[in-house]
Length: 261
Figure 1 (cartoon, rainbow, N blue to C red):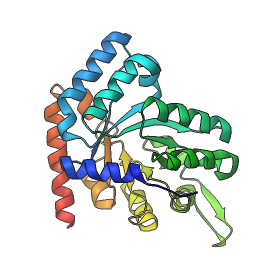
Figure 2 (tube, rainbow, N blue to C red):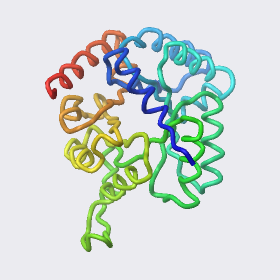
Figure 3 (cartoon, rainbow, N blue to C red):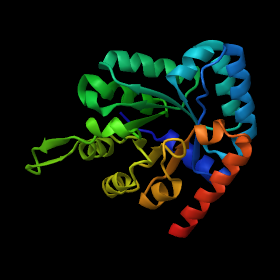
Figure 4 (cartoon, one colour):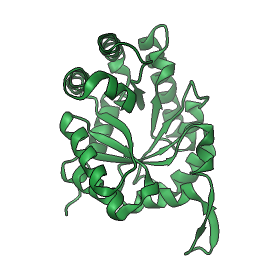
């Protein structure tokens, strides 16, 4: 099977076009369906020049609905040439994961997130096959951004090859690399772990870091540690002026990247 990485190229093209590494987590507080659609579109209209992609979570998709309101949001993002990521955290057996990925890709999403805990065979292999066959992306959850993530992703496990105990997230980073993932999610709230993952992943698998702002993650620290994309939600969507917040964040992060070159 030939492997294509259209999603990775699409992301880099968007970064180059907008000079922004901000992925907008467009997940708003739950509200009536029509109100949610109106507010979602309004924010996307305002901030699209300052972000390089859009991420939506399950609660947003379930509220918007998969074939009408949601389609309007995805179409608008596509009109703005913004890649869209479905943060579904695929975590089931292979045939179910494949069916879900198929549905998300058909409705218009360009990438999905997936949990490596379920493994490759009869787990994530079918997702990677359908994604890369269609030029779509898969982002692996290497270490999430919330405090309790360390209970799972940070636990020590026995590495048979190295003959020593290593953190679970190290194993997941290695899997993301060997599976040819299109990205690895590592919380901006754990900059030291971003650095560890960057040393493993290099330039092959870009790091996406959520948790900037509301969860306490600092974009500057994440960038210096090796994050390529910063996933930001409430710091933009709940701001009094979302466009100004996005613009300021874009500029601040751009300065950090410039300082690295």
